[in-house]
Image (cartoon, rainbow, N blue to C red):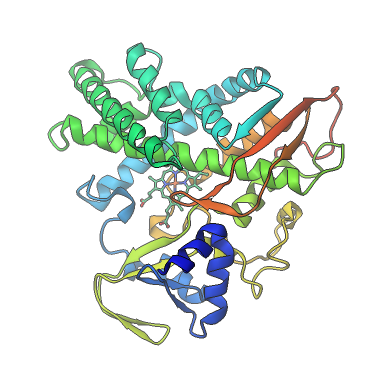
Length: 388
Ligand code: HEM
């Protein structure tokens, strides 16, 4: 990528990728940083869904787990513990939102809120207070969501190393005695990784990876939902849409995942180009969600496009196919619950909002201020959560 291209990309990543798509005539985009992006919707769906391209492990876990079976077990175990914890999370939200200041800087405030409400599910309250405190500092100090400045990232590395050491000690302790129902994500991982198969340090690495995989997209998706909802409804009245639809539309309009990559297990011709085993092909959720041939008015933020069961284009904020996000359903619930708690009985407005994403391991909103003004109780029109 040239300096000029990098500057353009940083200024507006989505305009940049749209421009590359416009210039491609084959349904394939050569990415300036290397690799290819499949922009044709049919080819992209085939790449994500066909078992042919999913014969090995998913790249999501890197080398942390030895088999695809182990990856699936871990994903399901973590999903289950979060799903069982939804009532606890909902109760924590009610208290936390009641104590929020009238104005807050997002998306940092979202990471703080989501972490606070998930804290007991990430490390249950019986965990040593020092380890829980460290987890809190790590969540807010750039370990969950990559910090923008280099100095912040170096500080996050130190916090990460300290949390890794503390979680490794906690794992050794839990392995000595506990064998009941999982109380938190760490128990869930220990249940899915028997001691003979994975060492304490390896499970701690996996824990930190899941810690980020849970917190970052939840807080970013919540921040996008608030920002887009507020920017598109400025009237002094409650939102006219069920919050469930706002979340769905925000994840369409600004999906956090920038590219979903698949390493080809064998040689294949795709869109007229011959690829070799080991080549990386990617799909951009943003491009698929904004394909004008498949979506009506794709650049408009319209939560009511999700009313009823109308036909729409490919919707892949959680990926698709064999490697789809293991936590998709519970993640949608957690974001919706948080948005509901924030918007219920309050008028929300933003200042400093910008719909151009910043790039930090995905599409992340640029900082904005959210103002919450409590409103007298009444039955607001858009306030069912909606059903999945
Ligand atoms: C709004 C929040 C979330 C978003 C937007 C999101 C998005 C994604 C995406 C795009 C992928 C890659 C899918 C692919 O390559 O096709 C993924 C994978 C994954 N996600 Fe999520 N995720 C979210 C929350 C969660 C949560 C709460 C969990 C906890 C269980 C979770 C667990 C996973 C796992 C385990 C994978 C790897 C799946 C596999 O390769 O087997 N995610 N997620």
